[in-house]
Structure formats: structure tokens, C-alpha cells
Length: 242
Image 1 (cartoon, rainbow, N blue to C red):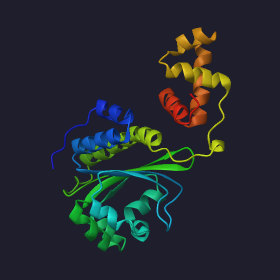
Image 2 (cartoon, one colour):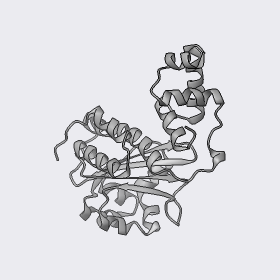
Image 3 (cartoon, rainbow, N blue to C red):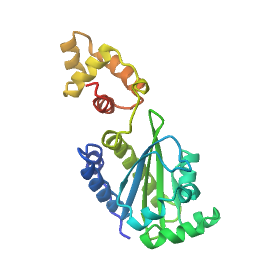
Image 4 (cartoon, rainbow, N blue to C red):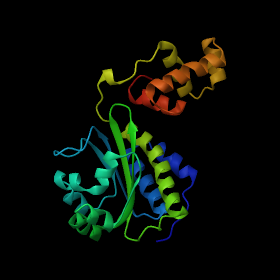
């Protein structure tokens, strides 16, 4: 299957999706650019249990595949999910992955729907939440090489952008005590940042130095467990604080 290069604007667009339909549409388009006709994921809280997954799924999963995995016991035996839950590393799979785990019949059941080989990644969010994202196709993946590493890196980059949108659009219920307590100054700085003001402009408005503004931004980002001021703003907007 041909592989096109995804561009950074595609990733930005995924993260800025304003509704669920647009989010799925952009994810599918980006996966196709990577050479994968199938993309699926879930935003979940806690661990996979015998009752299934506590979370919200998305993507273009084939209905036949979805029906097979309504049985939570199948999900719990799936070696790809098992590895994702047990380790922070990306998982690359094919038929041999399932056969080695004694679950060859699961691969046989999903292969007719295009799930023959693929890559999956897991990211963590605050509040004991996890974000899982996987891409699948019928054609074999490149042998372990620079080409395969490029695919894995592309999926990880896509996941980091998609996670922000998923957390905003598919937000799982959260207890108020789960959200970090921010000071009034931190919220003031984030509020003006949300309106597009630079650190220097916020400092002028709030009568503080640019260094102090960045100090409050840094504290808020650390409490919210994010890596940018934009992610901090999104989390506060989602929580109804801004």
C-alpha cells in the first residue's frame, strides 16, 4: 500500500477539531496518509476488566470487528491490548503476535475485516485516564528498519495531538477533587492567555513582569500535567474554569 507523508497542519487540525464528527474525519484522513485505511482508539479511565473498558471509543472500526470485541473476554485475551496495558512502548503486531500468545483464532476472526497487521500506542492523562490509538491494514509492515520507525514515530506524534482533542470532546466524568487547585493569579494569567495575549501583554494588563507571568504559567502547566500553555488553557476551558 502506498504511503504519503503527513504534514504538520494535518496534526494541528486534528488537535483543534471542534466536534466529534470532524475529529473522526480528520483522524481517518491522516491515517490514510500514513498508509493505513483503519484507525481506532479509546479514551478510558482505569484498567481493562472482565466487564470491559470504561471509556469512549472512536475511529472507523468495521462493525463485524466491533461485534466480536463486545465480548470483554476477547479484549482481555488480545495480546496487543495486553502489551499496551503492561508497557509504555508502542506495539507492532501481525499474525505471529497472536499465535505466540495462544490467541491465533482472534487474529483469524479480525483478519477478514482488514486487521492483519498494525501499530498501537498508549498515552497517559491526568485523572487515571489513558488514550489508546491504533492503525491497521492488510499489507505487511516494513521489516524493522528506518521505514518502520518512521511509521511508529508518526503514529506517536498523531496520538499526542489527537489526545488533546479526545480529552476535550469525549471528556470522561471527573470528580472536582481530581482537578488541580490553581491560584487566582494562575487563572488570571491563563484567562488572558486564552484570549491570545502574549506573556508581555498579560504582564502589562496585570501589572507584573513578563518573567512573573511565565512563572505563573509554568506553575499552572506543572499542576495540570501538560507541556504547553495552550494545553493548559484547553484543560481549564473543558473543566469550566475559564
